[in-house]
Image 1 (cartoon, rainbow, N blue to C red):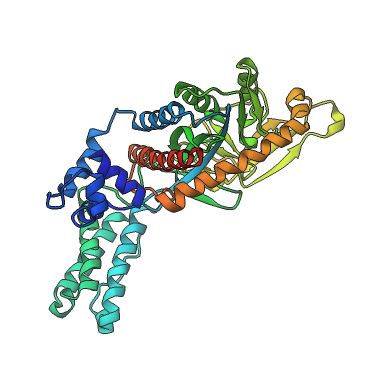
Image 2: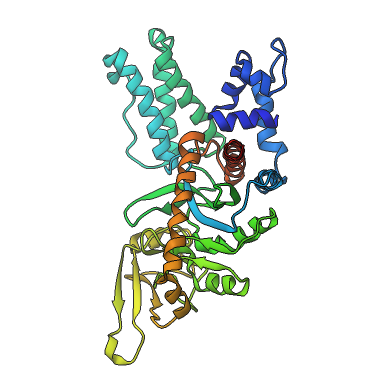
Length: 426
């Protein structure tokens, strides 16, 4: 079963397609240790194994540890450096409300019909004017009924496919199942102007380009808070670590202290916005280093920022971040965060320019600049995961499904890298 899942990850196939290909592809049969005439499994068995049997196994850590053990055993790892970064994965389902999702599916069905018979526009019911789910469900049921009455349309494959999708969605909503959005996915921000709906995978990789640790989280989580866990997980695989490379997201004050206490060199440039000590509500507001803005726990990003307090009044300047108050008014997490009828919502941090002198001196040194040159390697690894192993989009819904996908994709790229290192050492 695991070999089937590994083939699925390597070749970016669905459960049905990987089983189907195993019927005739001799390379698949050889890998699966099957004779040419052997029967394959039922795709539903693979789906159940992936969703149910792998829970509570800790598969991500288990598979990474196994690959690092293999590499250490074959003396393929000589470096004592890890590079850390996070890559994002878009959710399988778009961030749409139930009404928007239903409208999209009914529209697809109508468009398929219009290509064949434009006169059907007169036979479809009027579109609902409210944003109630019940009204949209009723409209979808009427659209289904109108199409099914036309026998010359129902038997056309292009129309039947869209009709079946609409019927399935209506049935799901009737049973109060919401598949229009991933239940665990969250809004994350790549830059100030661009966002994604999905997950983040926080990765540690050594100089030999083997992934030594990974943590899968929801999309709104900041990168810096997972540095210590990535280091500890890398240690657990048997890696010796002296240097840690990362971007400005990892130069938080707590990470600098951790590195010093554990005798590690932290090659990460300081950012005055994320190195503030003693911030208020640190657990509720996270700094997004790509956008240069703070994000609240609901995933909403500040819309602008401004410095307050003048320099000559004897006080530290503060950076104030302003949030969209219209979003705050309807936010499900507004209690304790937004005061009713408030005209604005802000979050401020003190700018302390005298902190982190040692780290600032280190980042200006030639040693820092030379070691920082290796950070590009992890960008190439992220690209490999996304473009060759389908890691740009989640294959299932939920954080657990994302963790399984991450485990298999990372296991695959690590095995490929080990094979390459073995060839180079011959």
